[in-house]
Image 1 (cartoon, rainbow, N blue to C red):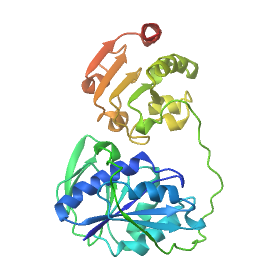
Image 2 (cartoon, one colour):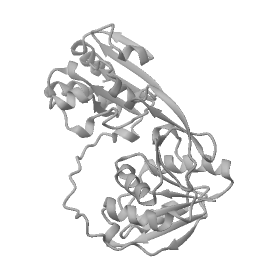
Image 3 (cartoon, rainbow, N blue to C red):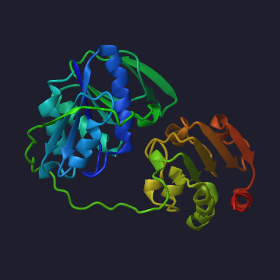
Image 4 (cartoon, rainbow, N blue to C red):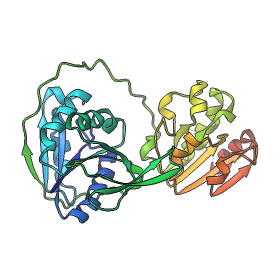
Length: 314
């Protein structure tokens, strides 16, 4: 039995989510006493391959280098996974946009049930994952020959790197399926940390009343070197772009500190942030659901609190 991890990367650097996924694989390997391989599929991504070879606990790095894999199109990535999967007992990918893009397709092609967003490994065939928007956890057991798994990366620490001595093996890359074409990618640029890797996050909700009022949040976030998030209500209202959204249909985060400002705490939002180590809620409504998960709550007007916070942090 051997475990295969699909590395997330941009052809230049390894995504932090991959290290969390590898950590889950390392836990799984303790139950099945087997090795771990990493697939690096892309184009001109030798730096990523070298980075993966230094991760502790990895046996082999499989390098599939081809222009057809450059943009990680779902059809091509799924075909690459299917071409390798029969040699493995478990295939893991991070439950990010990257993993969610091709893993369901690969699972269907293999006629295996996908096990989505695991939060814990119980044994070689038993895992824990959230259901009902994160309000409950289910322990499930799979009898499939190949366990196709996506990993909720916030539930696992990052794997350590620096002492690994994995061998590097170049493998045949799949040809372009021709089913889809990459057009372009629009990436927002910000000097603030990325949401899913930030240690501190300030999120704003509908209570901010207007997109311009997010400037109050930005002022505090910049002083804390924090990322800025938002509830779905704020995104739907057009206050901020959708890449800010935290929640069941947005990004799942687990920072050291999460400050929810003007957010009532809908189930869908809580599903994306309640694993944060410390949660602070600021809201004028003392009955808001957000206070049920908050470690610290402040019933106050955010338009008074945020300027005061910015002043104190000067």
